[in-house]
Length: 252
Image 1 (cartoon, rainbow, N blue to C red):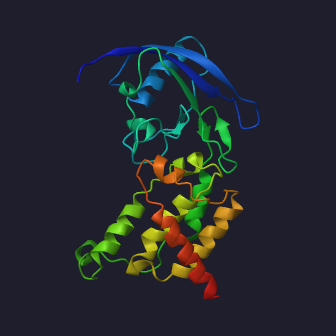
Image 2 (spheres, rainbow, N blue to C red):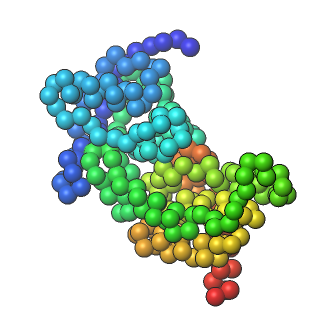
Image 3 (cartoon, rainbow, N blue to C red):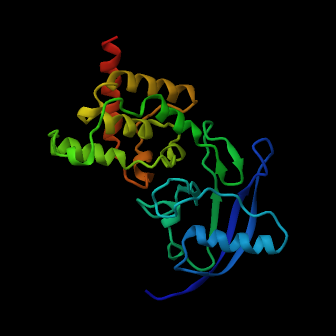
């Protein structure tokens, strides 16, 4: 692939702290290689800002391999940017054109308060997970992997749900800031397997209760969460969550 350099104008949300007012600031990003990732482009910009004695732009990142879910940015109106099924750290600058203006802002949700600039507090998702995203039975050692027969379709569906990395793009994309896709994925990955049956009913009740407590909105089935999910988690999990919740309620 041909290597090119492009010049960009960045409109970035800057907010000094959780209690201060924020605003967009404009930066020039020149001579940016199209082979850079979006985060590498920010690294270059931050290095320049530091050399100029200015405060660098705060943003979350860790693995930079599309695994950890930390790189939460809203880029030109889309969670994680213009590429489908891609985290921000996997988004490359060849997705943009020379001279383009790119607007970058943090996740916008009541349950995700801004800490600084593009960094938000996503610990609400951790608390939902802690409310019921575990199993209390012995799941076996490696050599016991084939000792418990599991239907292939159920195993595949469970693994698909387990692909969720908890990045919060589903919340950021939803007009109601709903966490239903995240919660349903965590419920589904256990409900589909025999090891997850011990807490099956209490799990869904506790996780939904925690989700509501955190202030996430309701799901209205627009499908924006599935469209923006970097791991392409299916909204069929939300239907499963609703069934699991109803069954658990009826058994009380």
